[in-house]
Length: 140
Image (cartoon, rainbow, N blue to C red):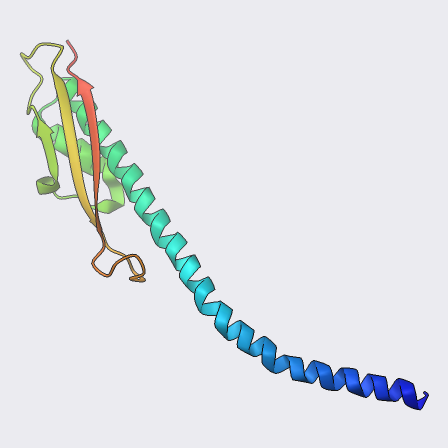
């Protein structure tokens, strides 16, 4: 090997060793932002999933009551459809409470409230309140 070639090789090696520290600093600056982004996406998707579940549960309760079921069976239908959200009956509002003997133009409205807490605390340490609502006309 010629001296010029050795000198260039040594200089390239020194240059690369100097870049290691810069790469570590850049990594340390980028990783926190990346983690915030990832956890924000996860928490937001959990909230959207809870919203979709609440809307579907409210629709099931409205359907049950509009078909002539009792108030208790409509509340049970909401709780069953909510699945892992584990809703209490106090978070479910149904008006009117029956479709029996009411005209078919009456609309049943079911509102379900749920408090979504966030594990990472990025979107709020106390969480957010989510509401699902559905309306259906009473069947004859």
